[in-house]
Length: 308
Image (cartoon, rainbow, N blue to C red; front, side, top):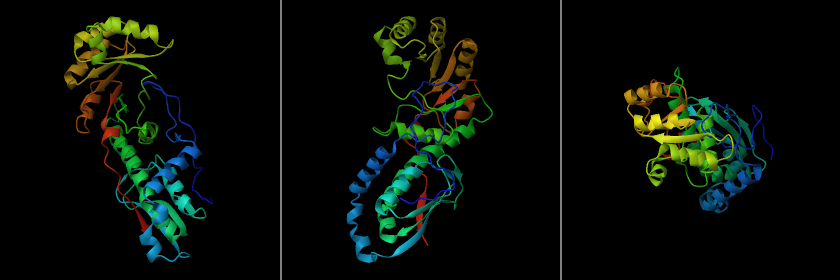
């Protein structure tokens, strides 16, 4: 499949799962192997019956060639380029694509993401699948970048959550990295996070919950616990929690808890975080802010395919 690019295209395995830490991730490390990428794209093309595109077959001569640009209709951050490449190449294995914006790169309204030339039928039949992948993934990256920009100059890092589309978690967390965010734990086995319902099971005994989790977790695993009031925070510090999640607290209470913890544990703010409120939350001094909206409700980035 011929392909020209402006930079080396990356398609490698993802970094190991980890809880919220200061680890630096390679934001461009794509989480799918080539065979899995191809399988997912093929499934999407089959769902769309792209190989039976009656409109295109009826109106476009089989030997007609075309050139097109995948264009940003609004400013944002690109993610999902590998899916677009695979979609177009699946429909025309001789198409030539030049990448102008790699995953993780910002684009402005009107910027070209890809230049594509090949058989017109193949480009038309692959268009919607390529855009569906890229608009969703770029939407996550773009929303993440907005949150990251909103807390710039504070110590806070923006985290994702496990509120992801089933089967899409590694991809959606990759998009968060493309937008400059940091991944929280990948799954339930990756790290300890004691939440309110877990505490209910031990009658609210913070210390007991932490001790039990330390006994069961791998040596050196970080233990995080959710607290919704200062008294729980005191108990969590005394029990030696590594990370304390401050749940649904106003900025004044967050600041009080950060001072109470006094560096003895990392702090994470969570609960209904919006773009308008995130700056005030960050200025409380927390280390992390987790935002479920990054993956459960990002608006799609407006991208389009323009034929020349």
